[in-house]
Amino acid sequence: MDRTPTIGLVAGGLGAYWPQFPDLLPTLRQSAAYVSERISGYDAEIVDVGFISDAQEGAVAAEKLRAAGCDLIVGFLTTYMTATMLMPIAQRSGAPVLLINLQPTESMDHATVDTGQWLAYCGACPLPEMANAFTRAGIEFRSVSGFLRDERAWAKIGNWIRAASVRKVLRHGRHGLMGHLYPGMYDVSTDLTMVNAQFGGHVEVLEYDDLRVRVDKVTDAEVAAKTAEASEIFEVTESVNAEDFAWGAKVAVGLDRLVTDFGLDSLAYYHRGLDGEQHERLAAGMILGASMLTARGVPAAGEFELRTSLAMLIMDVLGAGGSFTEFQALDFTRGHVEMGHDGPGHLAISAGKPLLRGLGVFHGKRGWGVSVEFDVAHGPVTLLGVGQTRDGRYKLIAAQGDVVDGPHMKIGNTTSRVDFGRNPGEWTDEWSASGVGHHWALGTGHRIADLRAVASLLDIPLTEVG
Image (cartoon, rainbow, N blue to C red; front, side, top):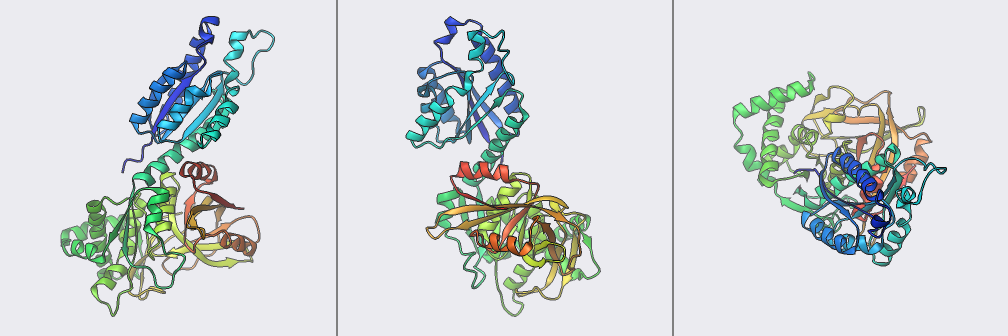
């Protein structure tokens, strides 16, 4: 899927000022051109409908932006303007609206400023009017105030544009759900209707036979090519059995076809199997291919973890990666929380070249074969989980920490040591009480500011664990 959001832009001011102050409108248009140029610099498609001066022009702009199918509309308050000018845009577009108030410079030259020049600094004046009218109309309100070259303000605007990309991907995404629930995992159980109702998109229910028939058609040449590709990406340890490696590569080719055939943007899967039969072998052979899919932007999560695959997708759209994660242990000596998971990981956020390790048994699951092992790149990270309340509402749960150095297990798992700057036991209690499930996405960078914007555009609460 194309993740580029469509950003609508409309600038405006009160037309009564133009004959009174002839130099004002050219000044405001110049500011509007700068805003349009800056927004165009983001990874976004911009639909700029120009400058409006009254309610009639606002209604025309509203229709243009509605037809454009925007993921976010930015309303630039260049000076005072009435709520009637922007209300139709907010009401008709079906898209969230961000109001920006960016005056020309940090401060006026108060000794020389005349009325016309002052009005160019008056974008703050209509902001509470818009907020009041939007609130009374039941329209979500958000804004950024600053000055034109205020990088603090532009960082916030960037948060909203990235959040618009997440909103687009979720609204139009296709999410594969293959197999069945890991028996007993109540927290993982997900109502597919609620996914569509709260995030949008489509959940494609798949059978393992959908994968089986594609794997059956994989040729020896395709296996050899995938094995060669994996050998470039991974450090293949001596523990890897050649037959198991070839099987993982064959399943990986089948997974590629599955994703293409169903147009998937994410995948969650699990199958228990029995006595080494074919479906058990398919499930056990997925780690290599699922990791390679995740690295190229199609998150794949085991244990039927649909909500966590969605969290991984959100983090990937934000440029943070997003690896399938759970608790492993607490290190009270060093003050770290150890976390990771067996199975697929996001290779793009590995601290070094990831390892392929051969395992004679997968703990807690049937089967055997190759598994992926790495540590997430050291530095700032963000955890993101999708929780669910007793009334069925989803919520985002996030925390920021730092991946740091320390000893690691060598058991074929992704694993990281995360320092949250506090007692790991106390942090773990607070995280667990937040409503998160026992899986989440771990991504690079501190992303809370982006996630606040994502939660606002999705109209979903965000719980932050410090």
